[in-house]
Length: 362
Image 1 (cartoon, helix red, strand yellow):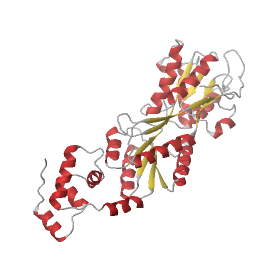
Image 2 (image 1 turned 90 degrees about the vertical axis):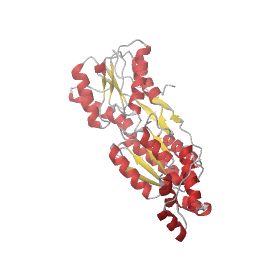
Image 3 (image 1 turned 180 degrees about the vertical axis):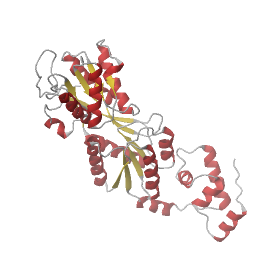
Image 4 (image 1 turned 90 degrees about the horizontal axis):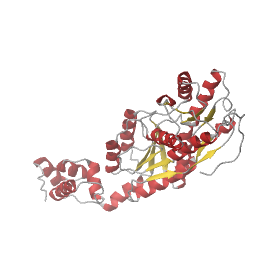
C-alpha cells in the first residue's frame, strides 16, 4: 500500500476549492495524463503508479466526474496525421484515402508535415496534444525512438503508424507487404534472364527499406545469384536521389542489366540517369518501381512496378484507429497485399523490349 501525504499548500487549496486532476498529479508526482489514464482504468500504467495516484485521490478527496469527463472526450473529434514528407506522391495518395475514411466517420483530420525531421516531429506532436487531438496517425521520421512512440501511447493517445514500423514500439502498424513486393519484382527480372540486378534507392534507417532489401536478397539467394555490396545503393527517396544512385551503381559496374527501385519516384530518377549515359530504359537496362503512381503508366517506357493500393492503406488505418479508440489495444501489424504490374520497362536478356499487359499472380 502507498501512502501520500498532502502538503499544507495542497491541503489549504483543497479546503477552499474542489481538488482537480492537476492537484492529484502534483501530489502523486506524476503527469496529468497519467492520472487521467488511471481514472479510465489504468491500461498501460504500472501498478505502483496506480497505487500512488489512488492514494493521492484519497488524500485530497478528489471526486471523478465521469459525466463531465465523457463530455470532454466527446468534444474532441480531431485526429492528427503526422506525415514524414508530403512531397512524396504516394504518401499523399495514402493521406487522401485516410482523410476520406475519417471524414466519412464524422471525424476531423489535421495534417502536418515533418519533412523527415525527428525534432520537428516531436515539436508538432507536442503542439497537437495541446490542441486536444484524440489520436495520432504517424509516418515516423528516421531516428524515431520506440520509447517516444510508446510514451505517446501510454499517455492515453491512440497511435497508428503508417508505412514504417519502429521496432520495439508497442503500437499498431499498417504497412504494405514490402518483402513480397520486392521479391516479386526481383523474381520477374530473374525469370527474364537477368543475373546482374541492382537494388537502388531508399534510406537505410527506415523499416520499409530493410524489408524491401530482404525481399530482393531472398529472390537472388533462391537461385544462387551473387549480390555484391556495390549492387545495393541507398539514396534519398526523391527523383534526384534515384538519379545519383543509378549513376554511382553503373560507374562501379557497367555489367548491371536490371534494377529494382525503392519507389516509382526513384525509378523516374533512374530513367534520367540512364538517358544521361545514352542508354534506353527498358531496352538497354530493365527498371522496376514500387508503388504504382498514376504517372508510372504514362512514363516512356511505361513503368513496370509493384502496386500498393493507397485506399486499402487508408481504410485499414482508419479501422485500426477506431479499434484503438474503443480500447481494443493491439500492437499487431496489418500487412496490405501487393501485386506486380507488368508494363514496358523490362526486357528479356537477348530480346527486345518485353511488352505485356498481364499481371502475374503473386
